[in-house]
Image (tube, rainbow, N blue to C red; front, side):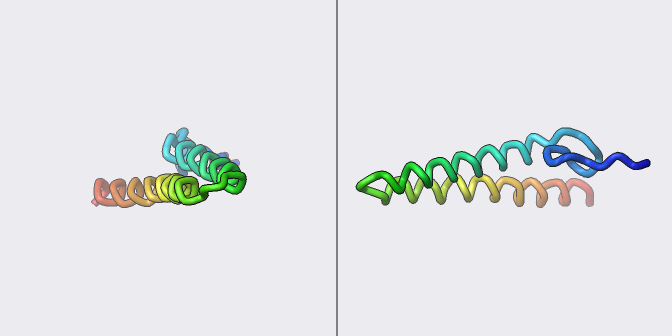
Length: 72
């Protein structure tokens, strides 16, 4: 029976720090978004929230690009 990878593991079953980082940044973005709704000046909070979302998903895409370049 083949063991399936969990959420924070890559396809080979190794722990994936990239997935953990993405998930942590996503939680930080959600938390910052909730805090931003309670502020009078929302502009800075919105910019921080978008930056965290971009960091969460951008690093994962960049990592996939780099690993594909290495395998070729």
